[in-house]
Amino acid sequence: MSMIDIIYGTKILEMTYELLRAAAVDNLLRVDTNVVIKPNLVVAKPANEGATTHIEIVEGIIRFLKDCGVVKLVIAEGSWLGENTGRAVSCCGYDVLVKRYGLKFIDTKKDKVVKKNMHGLELGICATFFENDFLINVPVLKGHCQTKITCCLKNLKGCIPDSEKRHYHNIGLHKPIAVLNTILKPNLHVIDGICGDPTFEEGGNPVAANRILIGFDPVLLDSYCAGLIGYLPDEIGYIRYAKEYNVGNLFNENTKIREYRKENRPQTTSRNQSQLVQELTQLIDERNACSACYAALIFALNKSGIRNLGKRISEKIKIGQDFRNEKATGLGIGDCTKGCRHNVAGCPPSAIDIIQVLKRM
Ligand code: SF4
Image 1: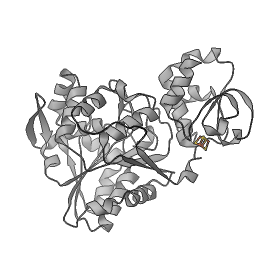
Image 2: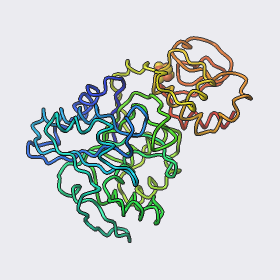
Image 3: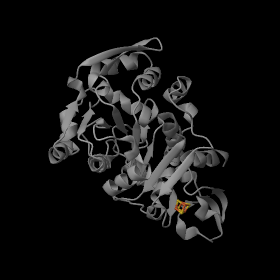
Image 4: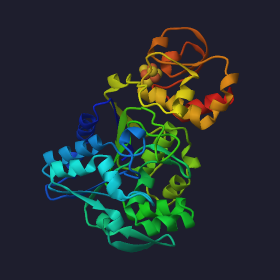
């Protein structure tokens, strides 16, 4: 399905529920559907640091499933090498969540392993992910120091044992991630785009974008999300491989984007800003900008390395609804700043569009 649904706001649980209903996910479920929810609990850090899946999203999914009559439901995840999954579970509040709903949390580091051969690779995968008929992938949209971005496709790396994680790094990382996605095929992807860190997978530089995205094609979603945080899909090796292996289709002009609660976009927050984000903020003249727009500019400034040119930028970059109907010099971001001498169109624009204009200038 060439469709992506996006909702904006800060009431995360309610947004998730509304988005699942809007995407008609109930039509895909039966009361005897056996569901596994796979969040991202890569490290023991709270979700507001930009690395792990907000518990409210998973709770929204659980409530939706329960209202659909689904009773067979578990949460499964294994943290990265060197992290204890139990620590991440309690740090992020998943221990309380599973107790509240009477669910089981499966630490996939302790799971049995099933071997599969595909595209010339033998890969070990945790057995839990073969013991369900509806897998819900709940990644965080964020940067990654080796693969540039991590979202739907790469989140499945939490479905493999630690020994296999080492193996992936030995065999190039991108190809095995794509091959893994030819074996495990989540039925639904619910992307946490609330405040992902554009730089590191372990968080610390959260940038509020206040959005959640839903879709069914991980290649479509990842290629769209790459643009949101400043990358072309071609720059991400595992997206290229996944396309080659027919895991899904790339985002293009025919992709239908449905947006909900657009009125909630002006939710820019300056709380919890890391030093990196504060430095980038110095380059911006922000007046009532929507979170997703502002986040796109922060992602673009970070990716383009413009921070190092800070002293040579004579005029701050303008962004926000208060620039509507104003004539101004310099660069403006988004349709609200059409009156600026230079402008990146879009409402909101993507980080990749901003980067391309920054490069030209
Ligand atoms: S261009 Fe659109 S997204 Fe950006 S600040 Fe204006 S209304 Fe918000």
